Image: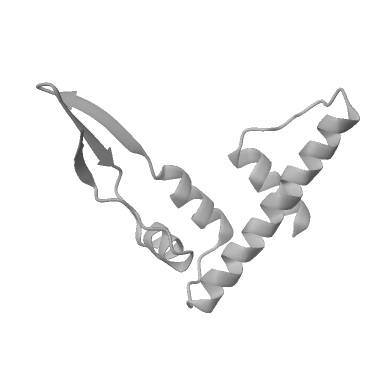
Amino acid sequence: MVEEIFRSVKSLLNTRPIYHRSSEAIRGHIFCSFLALILIKELRKRMEAKGIQYEWHEVLQELNRLEEVEIEKDGKRFLLLTDRSECCQEVCKAVGVAIPPAFRQTS
């Protein structure tokens, strides 16, 4: 499981392969990887507490698809949010993250 999580986190962050040139960089890489593991474990724990059951790869895929695009029309700026899947909405709700509206005007 740990190896699977390391692979998925590295793949998601596009960090593979990494060649370190110093022991500080190695320690930093290990620290970030460990922090990612803790965050994944906490997310899974909160999902389980809310009865949310999705495969890990589906959670990653759906969160990765969530994007916000800024457009300008007639001197006004708008933010558009991609469609939010049920999975994405439930995962965000489980951790207390509010998803902004799909369309809003900015100042």
